[in-house]
Image 1 (cartoon, helix red, strand yellow):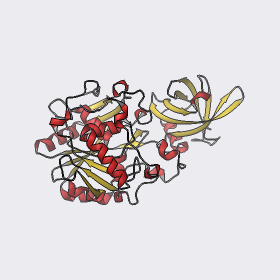
Image 2 (cartoon, one colour):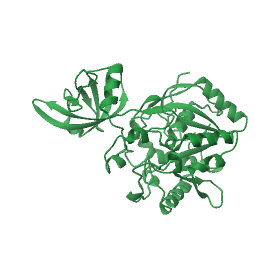
Image 3 (cartoon, helix red, strand yellow):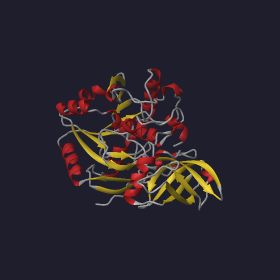
Image 4 (cartoon, one colour):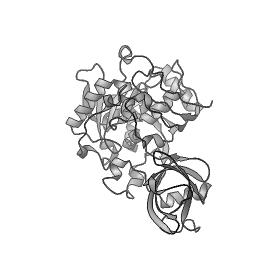
Length: 377
């Protein structure tokens, strides 16, 4: 499909720069194909009443690392300010990163991070540029490795806020908690699974009282979050692989929910992509431990997920393509227009919507260009 089919207009003032306080005070747009009207304006605290006893919510328990580092490039006695976002760990001491400005870097350059601060009493954190890609990616070989490198990054790094926030205000200490879900426990993501940001202890207690179970999967959100969709057609885009895991116990529990007639409600597109990567043609979920590069566009046949809770996504993004695939492109374009008119807050720190799937008769056939996950086990 043409990329411009997934475009829409968003006034800049609707881009949320801070989350709602408290988190569960965010608004919730309920989108229901065939309902009259198809949109209902609610709040996140209404979620328990919108689900049915026996349903299951699935959260991504990945933990965002403070992946933004600022440093100075040293070359032949000359220096330049450099900012990098770590996006994928290659081994104990090497990371792929996005650099700004990348044109100032070449293989062999040294970057010193932290302005001379001591890190674990070992001096400043330094790295060597091993290579540079076409999209501003660089491969960095740090002088530290393993746990020592992790400790240094945690001490010197900042939370990697999306550009539409970072370009409007500075990252601060509040973002270290704001840009992390209450479920975060498996370190490795460079962007938050933002649908999970809305949940609080009191909301989880209300869901439990309603008879809605919750389960965890892990998908470390990576480079695909930051890189734009190029070209004019979705068929030209290749998703970056991200590592995920679903345990045997979780797979069995969710298959049991389905067998008893409960709905699988994915909290976020990351949870949905991992569940769909691990689902067979019959909809049954298998354990998963590997990478997925699943790219969901209209025509994809959803196998396991019954409902989706998600934030509002950027125009022309792979995430807007995903929600259009799930609920229908025309309906989602109208839903976003309604959200703009009603002054919902958009993107990572913004409000959310609860989606039901498009009718099978309108969904088309599975997109043969969508690569499946490459799981182990």
